[in-house]
Image (cartoon, rainbow, N blue to C red):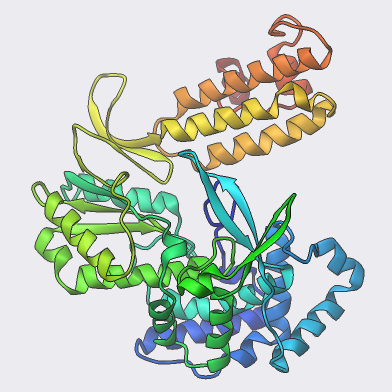
Length: 453
C-alpha cells in the first residue's frame, strides 16, 4: 500500500517473468479460460517451486516497502544470503511448518482527512503472498468482469476513466451513482470471501494459508509499548490493506456484486453499467434510472455484508453536475472557444494534495539537507503526479504546479542561507531548471522554439 492509501499495482505481466514461471502462468490461465467451472487441486507444489519463489522475492524487493514486526529488511537478507534465505523459506513451505507472523499496523493520512490503517506483513510473508499471487492470479483474472480495472495486468485507472467517458458520450449516460463503501477492505466477510476463493481453488494448503493471512493478529506500536489485537479473527472480517494478496481478494469479493448486477438483470433493466477500480465504483445510468440503480445497489451491498457510506454516496445528474473518480473530475467542461465537451481534469483535491506535498518538502526544517537531495525528492514527486494526471486539458494546471514548485524552491534556497524574501532576483529560471535540474512540466515558448531548431 502506498502512502496515498491506494494499494500498489501488483503487476503479474508475463514479459518480466522467468521463462519457466511464464510457462506455468500461461498454462494455468489457459485452463481457467477454457474451463470456467474447473477447480485447481494441486497448486501448493507450484507455489513452492524455486523459480516461483525467486521471482516473488525479486518483485517484492523491487516494490521495496517498510519492514514488518520483525524489523527484517532486504539489506539484511542480502547480507545473510538470498539463496540461503529462500531455501529456508522453501523448506518451511514444503514441510508445511509455515505460519504467518503478525502484521505491523501503521496509519497513513487519507485525502479527505482522517487516517487509514495499513497492515504491513514481514518480508517472509510478503514473498509467499507474491508467490501465491503469481500462481492463482492468472486463474482468477479470467473470472473478473472486464469493467473491474483495479490491480490487473494490462488494465489501469485511465482505462476505467475512458470507459466512463464512453458511457457518457456513446451510451448516453446522464445520471451517475457516485458510490462509496465504508472501509471496504476491512469489512469483507471471511466466510463468503473464502467461498469465492474455493470456487476455483481446491488445494487445501493454499486455502489454509490464505485463511491464516486473513486471521493474522495485528501489532500496533506506541511509546507506551506494543498492543496486539486479533480483531480480524474475532470479527471474521477484513483483508488487510498492505498485504500483496489483498487486492486480488478484494477484486474477487467485489465480483459478487458485479455478478448480481449483471446476471440478475439490473444492468439490462435499468440500462446501468458499473465501472469498478478496487473499492471505488460508479454506476452509469440513462436519464431517469439513477434513483432505482442507487436503491438496488444499496440492497445488494447489504446482502453482501458491506456498508454504503451514505455521506459520500450521491446521485450526479449530468451535465449540470460533475463527479470525482480516481483523482479526476469528470463532467462537462468548456473549451477556450466556449464550446462544451465531455472530459476529465485533475480534481481540486488531487492538485491541493500535490501542492501540500511540495510545500512540505520545501519548508525550513529541511534546511540541513543539500540542494541536490531536495531536487531528487521534488522531481520524482512532481513527475509521478504528472505521469498519472496527463489525461485531458492539463496545460494550465501544469503551469500552476511549475510556478508553485519554482517559487517554493526559491524561498527554501533563501531560508537555507538565512535570508528572507522570495528569491526571484537571486535565483533565475535558468539556474533552477538548467543548473539545479528542477523538473518543468510545461516548457516555455523559448524551450519549444529551441526544440524545433
